[in-house]
Length: 82
Image 1 (cartoon, rainbow, N blue to C red):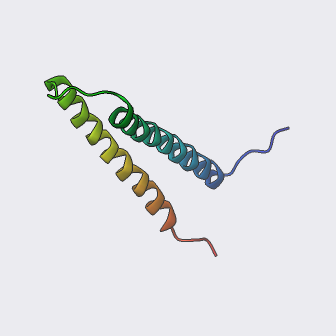
Image 2: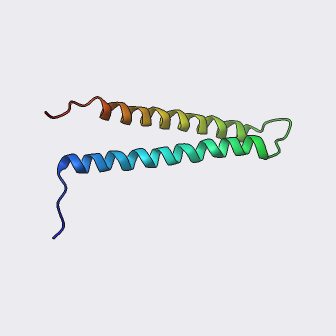
Image 3: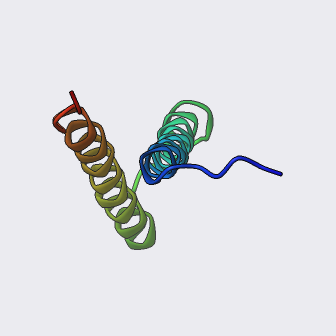
């Protein structure tokens, strides 16, 4: 019979999973930005669609970094059981 996890163990696994997934998404977006800036030839004028896409991606990256910081901070500040 499988061992049942305690609520603390389940919470720790959930936080770790969410943190890793957000970190992976954050890394993929940043790597995509850097690749697009360095290796893709850009026209002299930026199209309005590109400008809106970059603005949207910048907002998403800001949200992801804040969320990751919140997850790390909130779990690091919890009271430890004696």
